Length: 327
Image 1 (spheres, rainbow, N blue to C red):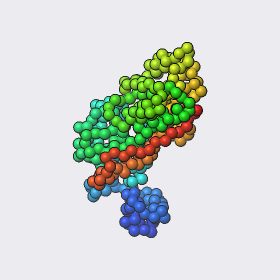
Image 2 (cartoon, helix red, strand yellow):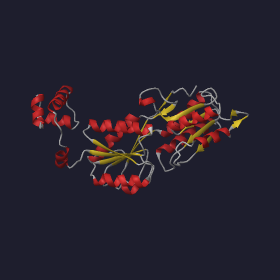
Image 3 (cartoon, rainbow, N blue to C red):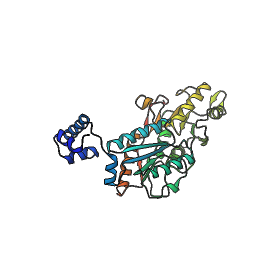
Image 4 (tube, helix red, strand yellow):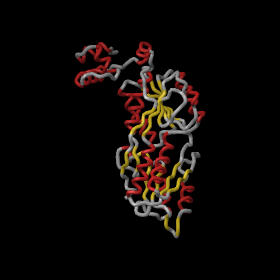
């Protein structure tokens, strides 16, 4: 079995240079290429167990999300794994399915497996598990313990959505949301939207369908929209939704009502989801910088692991993206 010394000899570099490449530290592009080629050629495999004994780290990070069927969560996990891998870390992925007992089970499990830190996104109240004995970074949520929060500027997102609807000619607006009512940065989407409507003195309405298991309650949305028809015409002409998934559901119900988008009603979602995460935007949307959020989360967690100072809250900018549902 090849050793790190064998790799160094084959690549024509120092053992320390090989170690830096394997641990994701900076070396010149040329030396990095030489080492990586030698690793592949010799079939070298790092002994993570021995590495952990030496450094007292497992180089494993637990990532907990509600589910990976949700395109936004899947995209976030994708970028987190990419960042961790570049830095020599492994990812232990858990999906809670919004179940607080299942989430608590995973939190106990990752502690038993001695992970170096936890990243995640939760809609449950599990403050007791974030006591400071293990570094934690969360997206969109604040906890009582020393937990770093990474988020995008949700308040600005709500303001931008209202502003763009008004710029497209809408004058009677709706905000529609589903999801948890626990205190989180995402609640600021509606707050920003409301603030802009009040500033511009535009009529608006806030519709909240709660956080039941039926995540996108299609029939309830249909009935709410239908009840706001006047002589077959909608009494609203602009809709902002709390997520892109919800926006897609709203588009489906508007089609059932024979309401044309964007001619009759403009629709803006929130997240900036794209087809296969690379193609066109699914709807006009407030796009979150998911890759930057993942990078900031990983960087903050690794600083916490090294017992370095980190910001308590990191807020990243959002942008409006055109997806064919606005004028």
